[in-house]
View 1 (cartoon, rainbow, N blue to C red):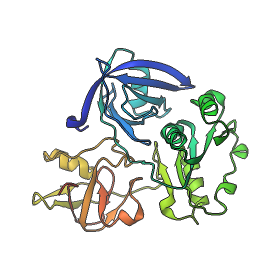
View 2: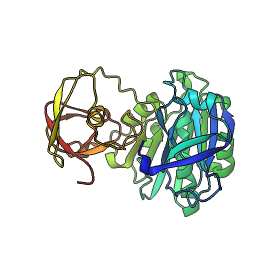
View 3: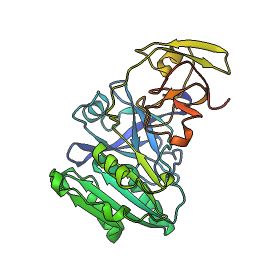
Length: 317
């Protein structure tokens, strides 16, 4: 976590909003204004177990006095969500990174927002922004049941006919049919966040759309690929240093081990915090952030690796 961007906040509210989903609100001790943010933004939190985890901001980002997130208790939790659920309570102090945005709402004629389960959270602020600005949008929210769907009733009450809420009961035969939404391409931009099967379906259905109109955020990346790590050398142009990256280490871990400060947060290839310039060499991109047209000029050093020796540098050089 970048210490220069860290905020020391207090837990001002903790409540259940759906099965296995808790809402947390964080505020300054003096209730002063917090850094503003745009729809799609997230904060990184130092969880009680010591891991840094990112969560989408739900509330209005214009001169906020609190940050609101929702945290799902994941069955395969590595400790982050579990420690928040079990150990973080009202009145506790928490270190929070200033808001960042790797899922920004770009200007478009209209929008289609598709959320599955806890993936609804980054889309709430986007829908709110569209409503405030008069932009056309539709929000499709898919969940297993009412019990599992955070904020679904609030969304219906707030956005009325602009929202479709679909419950499939966990039956694969009852999932929402998105084909009508994608059959004929149009100028709208699509924002999707949810479980991997939902993301894969939207990717497949939108294959004939312009790539720049389809946006994804993946909370639980599972590439489905078995990678083989081969050692390689990484060189940093601005420092003139070169380091060996072993088969059991990442570039990020290697640079940190040599005393270099590299911004990072998720360390799973989903947030974009550790992006560095790629100056030469071939890379196996394992992240979920970069677009294909960025592959020759950028690398996410927390997960991606050189296919051979590579030269990189910090973003501000």
